[in-house]
Structure formats: C-alpha cells, structure tokens
Image 1: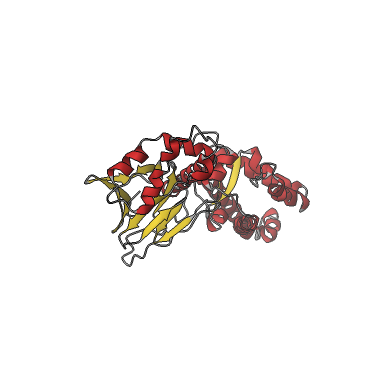
Image 2 (image 1 turned 135 degrees about the horizontal axis):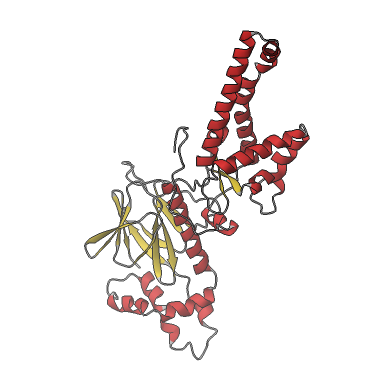
Length: 361
C-alpha cells in the first residue's frame, strides 16, 4: 500500500453489511483525527492554489488578446483540470488524495468499508466547493461539522451525504487484507474474552458439564503438577453441588491454562495474552498478559499470536505473523490461519518462527 497512484484499494474478505458502529469499534477502526484531517485539506489545496495563482496576472492580458496571456491562462486551467481529475479518481477508487495519503487517512463507505467511488467523490468535492458561497464561514461550518457528529464517528455533513467515513490508517486499514485480517483476529479475541468474562457464575456449570476436564486429570495423575490437579479437581464438587447450589460460584477458580516455552519458563494464562518479540495491545484491546520472547534471529513477529483461556481450555489466534504459527499434535503440524481462532489442548506444541511452546493444561 505504499506509494501514490490511481489504483483501486485492495480489499480484504468482505465484512457482513451494513457494518455497525459497534462492529467498527470492535475491529479497532478509528475516525481521522481533526488535526491531521485539516492538514490533509491544506496539502490538497496547495497545488490548486499554485496552479491558479498565475491567473490573477494572465487573465487581464488574455482578455486583451495578448497571446502570452492566453497561453499561460490555458496551461493553468489545464493543470487545474488534470489535478482535479487525478484527485477525484484516486479519492473515489482508493479513498485517498495527496493530502490523505501523506496523513495516512482514507475515505470509505461507512456501511461497507469499501471505496466510495468516483461519483460520490465528485459530489463530496462539489459540496465542499459550494460551502465557499459564504466565504470563510461556510467552509468553517462544513469542515467543523465532524465535531458534532451524532454517531460520534466524526463524519461531517459532506461525509453523510455520500455515506463516507474518513478513517485513521494508523489504527486499522480495512483495505489492507493482512492488516484487516489481523484486526478481525483481535476482534475475535475481544469477543471471546468478553464472553468468557461476563457471567462467571454461568461459566462454572458449563465447565463442570464438560467431561474432558476430569478425563485429562484421570489420564495424567502421575505426571501432572499440583496446579493442573487443583484445576481439574474443580469440577469434582459437582457431586455435593445439589445440596448447596450457591457454593460453586465462590469455590470455582477462574479458568487458567499453563504453557511452557522452549526457554523452560512455565506461564499460567489467566486471561487474554499476547506473545511475540515485543507484543503490543491494540487500541481498547483487553489484554492480561504481555509475553515478550527474546529472539535474536527475528524469526517471530512483534506481536505473533494471541492466547485466550475460557471454560473449555485455550484458544490461539495468529496475529498476521510473518513466519506463521503452527499447532503440532500427535506428530502432525497444522498451520493456523491468520485471524482464525484455533482450539489447543494439553499435549499440543505451538510452533512460531524458530520457537516452540508446549500446552500443559
């Protein structure tokens, strides 16, 4: 996505439409900051001013029939037309003008997260130009209208007219397949974390109803460390539960899983965790553990994969890593698709870059 050209924005897999404000927030899509939005408008205006400035001096001679005035005026007008067409074509097909490209902003349809098209880009430009009918005040009101957007997405009147939304690419770029798939992965992690954290009391009977927990405890009693034994014993109070239904809530521990990295460190995962060379949580992302892994060969990504623990065990989500993440089970390696949650169980080995981690419980 680097460089500036009149090309269509590459699209990620389509989102279910219409994309609600809640879904956009879950994906981490952020509106364009006011300061950068204004700077982008100034950058876009500068070439037009540069091309139009000579007309103040060449139009009078052109009207008087002087050849040089006619030629220079014609060149200025031609440059303005070409510049306008380039700007409109790029804005419509990829959501960016010169200024927006430099400020890392993009205009997309708010309901589909796709480019607005040439027609809507033209209508938007006409509305902005029409605001100059009332000099200074008109443009100030129109360009300031995003500040009082009822949807709190900073969409101005001209954006609403074309169903557009100017977004910040430093947050998420929905037209970048890799970045957007990673955003979807983070959204799934947030959803799983929220779902597993909401009704703790409801999660307890669900965990007790799953036979896998006691089965694993019975299969591994000799080798299992004390922590997993305590964990798996938690469902055992299900027998006296009928006599004291209120007891499970305070007695049942929160879900936890243990992972042993190839450094020998064993980490207890109590909530959403990020693993990588220098993991960083996204905006508004719920993260309980940041697990940096020293990697001199840089075979693992900065934020390589996420782990989420729920009542049924551990869920892994690759965060669009460069070298990928694989799950080795019974000698067979299965790659994890970026952004797609994968259930991992005790005995699995997670391979990421040149590093490994074993799921204990």
